[in-house]
Length: 128
Image (cartoon, rainbow, N blue to C red; front, side):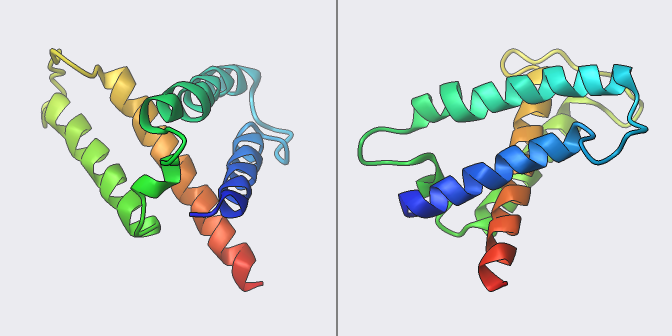
């Protein structure tokens, strides 16, 4: 993926984060906004700073891992949902994993969902 397209996806990611914070919805409650803000801050930091640093170098961009675009992101989302299902049984009993806590997986899922939405918006904007 080109750096120009990467910047567009990043911009749409930022816009979606702002929309989720209730920028257009005045009725959003403070408590929800505060909790969502904390979660989104963690996701944004993880996706834009730490996660990318773990996966990128001068030759590889984070988006290079998603050569099939939305399809690859959908596979990541599905994998995270399955992981969460494996940790939370049908009767609601939560297993404590040795690696990747419920919170880690939930934040990953949120991050991939935002990437999916920002990529979809980028594709839609391209058509318009």
